[in-house]
Image (cartoon, rainbow, N blue to C red; front, top):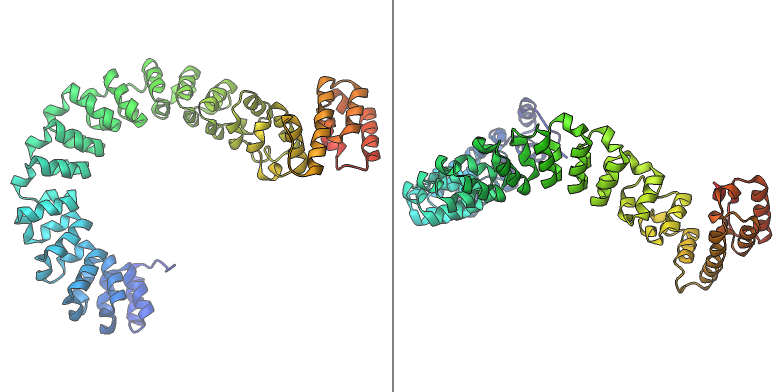
Length: 456
């Protein structure tokens, strides 16, 4: 990547290295008009010239004459920088193909050509760039079909239309639909029409910014919010609690724009996250750490967990799994979804959580054995794996029915060591039981179970 140079450094560099193509190319890519300091051979080098013109249309002044006479290369320069048209020979500014190429890149280029008086050509130009309407003859600015076509492509072009068309409902709606800012150019009488305003805000809620007379109108603001939650920032009602509740119920993400004190209001935040869980990101830190609020948020959108400290809360994530909100695990702390013991806790709730564990655990033999055993399905695949899964399925059935029975759990462990994980915490924390279980596992040829880690 070329080093960014100051203009003075660039000028010094090209003066010192005017004979070196690489130096010239580097400099004119940043400051095209410095092509004037290049050697004539570089001023007729097409790659160098195009790089210079792309940077500055003034570079055209220093292009070798033979290149300026080449119409195909003139088109290349226009495509590199539409405003190059103003510096090219006059014949280029009268050439329909060249002018259209320039207008396609920058509608203002129509002003550089006498063709702007040719109505048929201007229609074609406006189809290429709505901005060209600015330089169209006055009769065309009042042409309904042409103006509708222009504002549909770029709503900002409404400002160039004749006054009577800026006050035309169909034209104005076509413009506002594509650009909220077009509302600023709608005729004053139409902007004061409540029916029109409601219709326009259904298309572009943030057009409310240009409607000061309606920014404290509850019905109008709610209509705008239904289209775009960002519209609330333009309303004077955002500090009123009663309206804020209505606003966030309509568009949860509008919570971003309520007054700061309302971000501490649990009822307001609950209403917002119930509408859109991702609104949790705008709540106060206190409410981001409130379990009820986070629970409502992740049930609406599991990704909301990303904005809460509950990403590392095992109990909360187990609750999500029990509630069938498995996708929440995709946004949990990566350390947790890579933790085997926690993974087994999740699998014991629902084996569907397997798909939301880390890739390493999804391919871990012990984890897969637990999942297969817990699912109690017809096992297929590798024979040794299937045999172990069947044994673990039988063993864990015993333990889950009698998790506090020392004898039954030990018997199950003898059947398959991994069943130990399902014993009660009291048994797992009993040193005598741990010793017995460890001896039993060792006597079974050490099937890979770390008793201490399992007991944890």
